[in-house]
Length: 108
Image (cartoon, rainbow, N blue to C red):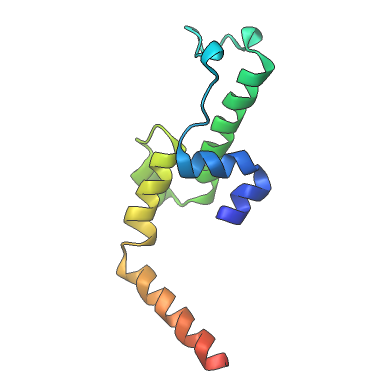
């Protein structure tokens, strides 16, 4: 997932790992977030990265995983929840990882 996100946009991986890409102090969110005509180029780039990362994660997961992260507000929250509940915590994943390592060592 890391390589996929970095290939998509390196800033997207930064957002996934650290949280929303910060807006400059002078470009804080507008009262009407739909009023994109008044966004500066810098603010538009930040908004675009923050939306790309959520889209990337939503497209990379199953419906079951979506249910676990649908209440998250940021990609970092989504990533942490996926990591906690799905990718590190299940015995099935641990068993698969062990089987892959055993297979790797059997090859050499």
